[in-house]
Length: 171
Image (cartoon, rainbow, N blue to C red; front, top):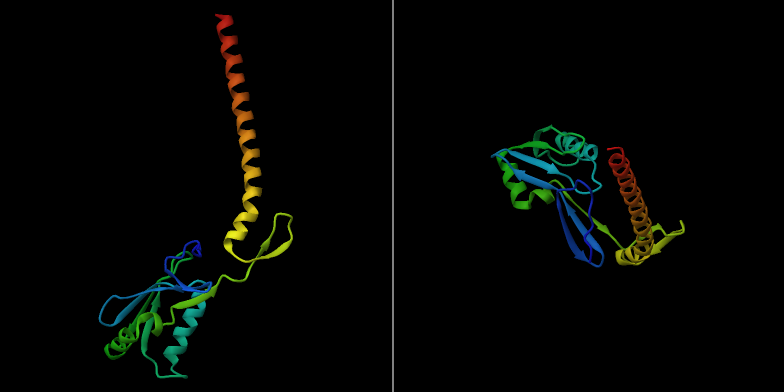
């Protein structure tokens, strides 16, 4: 089966079976009291993660285990540095950073809906069905492109021949 892919996603993608996939962010311990998060799961937006960190720091629902955090995000890269106490760091590492910071999401690929070759919405059973549908359409366009390129090359070659003949006739 084909593995789901998202442009720019650097995290892990794991097949859970039955058309279910797990997308995990990237977190690593950088010192005794710091954790660096450099990727969030697919469809987990930076602002949502930041709001979650703020909620944890406030400690309204549960005791706070985060001292502070800094963000160095760019439009293309995620980068959070989170500061923890040593006690909380041990707990986070034993529980797992992915679970502690909820850095995973699951998605299914069973609901595949796309426009077909005639522009109508259609539900597909698998990714291979989509590929089969559009393979023939793409093949026609590749043939048209090949004919167009061949025509241009012939025109260019004929033009070069005419120029060479004109040059040699003058001399």
